[in-house]
Length: 224
Ligand SMILES: [Zn+2]
Image (cartoon, rainbow, N blue to C red; front, side):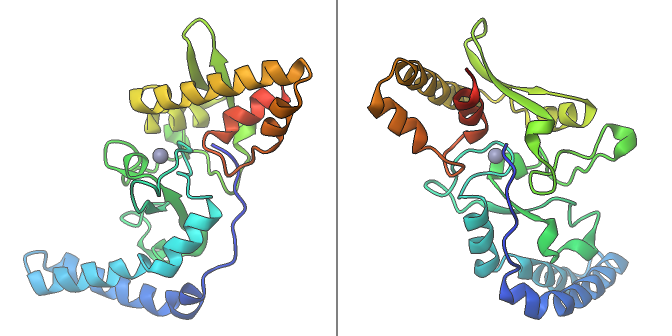
């Protein structure tokens, strides 16, 4: 997880968020008063789906360099990626169209088994770390553990622990295997660069926040 700067609010939200929110809250109220009514349900779902506008998704995709806000995996070569509401729309419907409440996420991190509509509060060791409003480097260490032969996320503090456990950042085998492989490659390049090899130095210098698992890469590059 790396800190990401929020870019400008897409025009479609600038123009419509207020109206969409009003309609959505009204449709939600009507549906909740009569959950068996399929027309009301459709109306509610339609009002809700407005946030999933292609301009909004494109803006988020660019903002997060096409990577998941939480696990930092590249998403767009295999899926569309998802608009993730930091404060879930089911609990905070008034924030459904709020630009500052939207992040870009892979479907696994955003899915029910992980974040879903969970939002632990302070008394539940939350909230989770917000990769836009906070610097994840203040809450996690991203290290390669030689003994485990694994690139792992070490949480610092209760909120960070909640975050790691919610997204199962150290327990999703396909995730940590892919991440570890990349981290080990970077470690080798760093060793060669430290011996003075110019090509290896150039390669390290070419890496940027656009790269997958950059939180780990950064911590390797900065290590002496
Ligand atoms: Zn993810």
